Image (cartoon, rainbow, N blue to C red; front, side, top):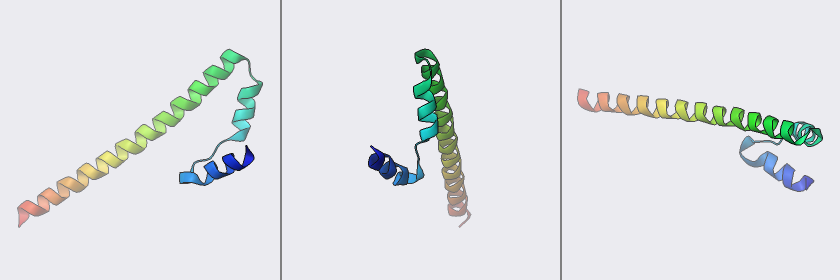
Length: 72
């Protein structure tokens, strides 16, 4: 299992926080579920933030291209 995790760590700069995983394993079932949901929510919010930034950048790029096209 260690090799799988190390391979996953290298993939796209993402890593597994083994300390958090161990912490979850030691918790009561409902506490672990709540903590896992919180971690998922944080991850989702980061993903949404990145997507928003990418969309904003693409929209801005598109608008600049449009303005340049019409200025000729």
